[in-house]
Length: 271
Image (cartoon, rainbow, N blue to C red):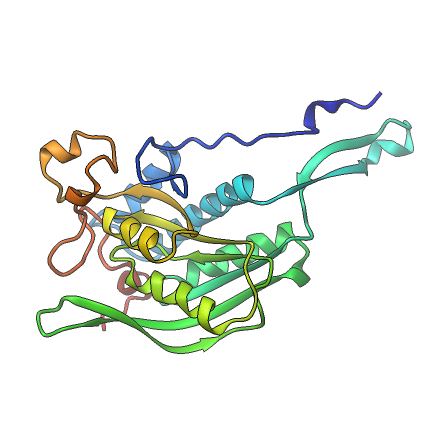
């Protein structure tokens, strides 16, 4: 007889309780929080920085896969089939026929997107997996306040119809760049994605507010929420309870406690 225990496997995500809405997933993962603390630490330098980014994104992408990707029932003969007719695994696995597009938002997103691309190629039918590229930069005024983002170039490999459209970008600060990137696909790239997903290491309440306002369909996965500039009485509440009073950005729109400018640190380029 076939064992049915893997017919309907349900993945249970460990995440923080909050009031930002059902599309926000703040992971409760001690291993990832530890690695992110090492990455954020003042004394951490290359090559450890990029090694930690790879490690963090490998697990973050696997979390997204476990929660979001559909499954299919299979019957796969094992090596034991040569000696026993019951040497067949039967159960649900990830559906390999899913389309997926990962978007490199240069420059902090380049390495995370490549990690995502490699993992998806190993899991899905590689003919259905693609990596696109956007060249973007923050726009600031004379007071160094972020006033927007601009796309300077793009390399898009096709449509996104029925694809999981994934944006792996480490720092969700103001949300300006991410909003611009998702908006670019809505306006310029043919097809309706099955799901729009952002994969972030750190997000702020301001980022989550921007995502909800501009792209409410986007699903956010993040290792850590930083709201370090909020008042003590706000920090004592469940995240999102006093959303308008929560603050994670300083006057230059850098995240506090944050990790510094990862785009600069990851590339050892400070311009």
